[in-house]
Length: 113
Image (cartoon, rainbow, N blue to C red; front, side, top):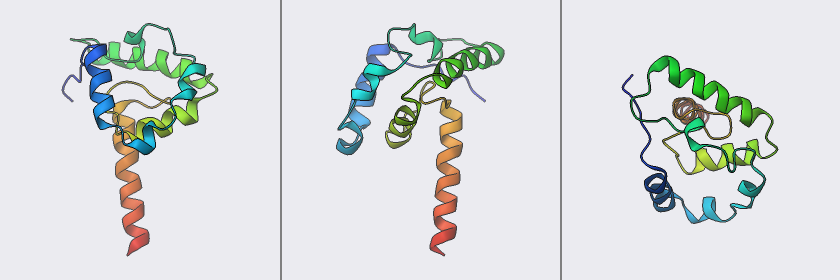
């Protein structure tokens, strides 16, 4: 798997703002109560050149923060709705969100047929 380094924080925010649909952007209030708020973003987003082992360790640390967060579900819903391609959101890595979306699509197609 190629290294999926996140862009700078400002670039990432601009990318998110462009991608978010109005329905997903309606309420960001949940972020005010997020445990990750104010923490080093490098816990949640891959720095350039991060190796596989370091990424796994960082993602595990991020998931520990998420596990104790009262807005975990809202964060996860946001990341899935916005198709967030970077970082740990709602206790899910970017890869886990891709797999979740693929499984959801497959389930939807099965039910439709």
